[in-house]
Length: 130
Image (cartoon, rainbow, N blue to C red; front, side, top):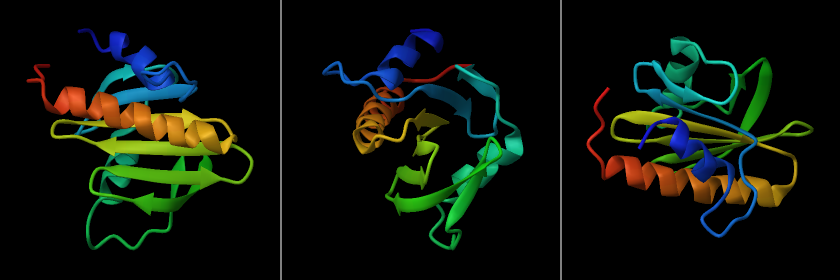
């Protein structure tokens, strides 16, 4: 499956609910494999990956010139929220990092988590060759 073919799975849940408005899949080094908007720098990807470190004490992350505040970081999914600009979901996979931006409706954040988890599971179970 091409990287672009994963976009619909990030923008909508398997049940058909709206999720991310913008999304991207990047290598762990920050190489863009797919992005529905502007590509992110390797430094931004590194900063997002650091959120999953057990020693990380960051409470927010700067993303596309917007500061998102950390809500929750699990083993491989991080959730962030901005007061007026919506939410951000980051999934850390074996070989990639997935980013999904969503609107201000809280259901969109939940739906984006579901979508990111689905794509992350699929990619973790697939041998990625770039």
